[in-house]
Image 1: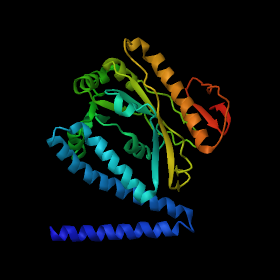
Image 2: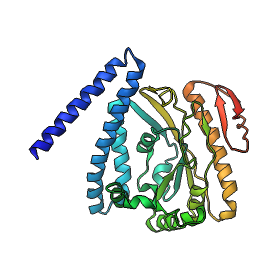
Image 3: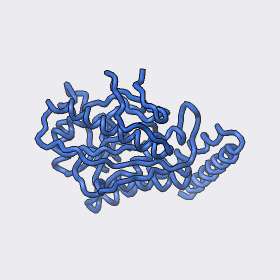
Image 4: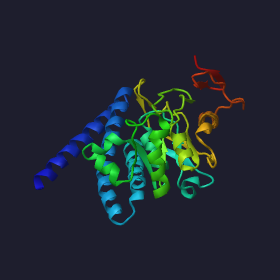
Length: 305
């Protein structure tokens, strides 16, 4: 045990020294600052994972398993702010994060930094969704199951409705909210935009008859740009929007529900980004092409080619 602690100490000291070296070099070479914050992010993630395993075991033994992912998320929020100087400022004027449960929370997906956004806004008694196959993954599968993740089995399902049926029953039975990214992948966009939405989250909300609560973050490409090798400290505005009821809706309403929700979110993302940048723009909503992607640059709104 003493040897393990000794080598762990050596590793942390060396890792810290390397991170500090790149941070200082970043004052002269901008790319080095990118490397420094990547290293800091990884060590923050490792620290949160260690904390998460311990806290999940403790909370589960106390019958509070539903708080596990909230607790882990908050730890990552503080680790990241301490090591990188980055955080998300969550605006929830009506207290939806505390008062609405269960619900399907959804948000825009920009980069890997959205994990930090979850850490800053994740409500209590909420979990992420995961593929059912991850149950068998060593350590990760056990942690996700222990912390109350909602598993979705798409392998044996013909469409999104079938895949979400089991998850909907879990939500109703456990009164457990879930968080999903309906874009399905990261956009990596330099301007506020949304990729086309997949319908799984909306089928899930309709089947469970729970509200959809959109959460949007302003575009933060000035803080993190993978392609541009930019990674800076800063604060990103994030806003919780009013819930959208699914009471009485059926699968036939999912297309319209998806379109309506996406339009609301895109308008709010544009406004939030412009406010953060000190810009103004016309109040008209962006036009959409068939692929459902709109981009906004400065105060000019144009349809993506």
